[in-house]
Image (cartoon, rainbow, N blue to C red; front, top):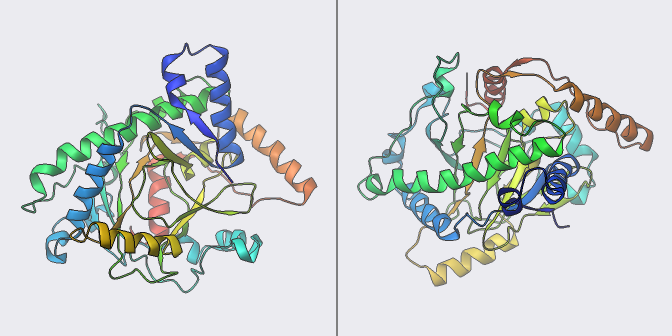
Length: 372
């Protein structure tokens, strides 16, 4: 199945109150409600910037482990700098509600079995893209300063490339947050203002396919993201599967070439919408198309590292923002749950307690073994 394609160019070029813009915003909100995901078209996004970014991250993660370890910050719950392989655990491996969701799927549509899965073999780097708040935060560890790698072939290239690609992703997802608000009959600035000082992260993952390139290897186990919205550029290697809400189908993601990005809802959006929009489940695995791409890359680019980089950005609400369901959205969510109950397709019922966004993030980090 194909996810809805949302035209950000239309939103940016036409009057906000025009019928065309309002219809596109409703389409965006509807896609998030129905599928928890969408494809975003933004002609400002440059594929060449993504290519430069992927080259940089391949070079970075091809460095010796001793060099990478210099950029670890476990005392900050790995929320800045590098997280090395076999550190982050998929929450769903032991989370009962998540395991029940898997059990309800048709066996042919289930993720690869994570119940005996060790921590993910992927690495990650977090690069802060947030604006500093003019006031003190209750969560300094979630808003720490960036780590700039000092490797000889990396240091000078790092900040300009990370900032350029990160700003492209941030601009696209911030505008989509406005579209979603309008489409949900909220003021356009609702989500954008709530995320003005969010600890947004350019958050590429890296999987060594020379080491973990066997078919059916789980690179990132079945999970949702803890932030508000996640946006992805194209990776060089296939392997990302998503589960669109209300379909029960595992979808192999194919982001079209050019100015397209994949967007998924995260847990903060689920919380503030009272479950009207659900966080999207996904996994990254080595499948047949991954293996085919590995062989092609070996032939065409024999001198390049065989490392799968995800071009990922996490857009967050501000850490000190009071996270609680918006009443109008909670009411709509309740109606959907009633309809599902009548049709025998009832989803897991969650309770969305009021809390600071920072507390919400800390709770999720403990589940995935990044915070003690």
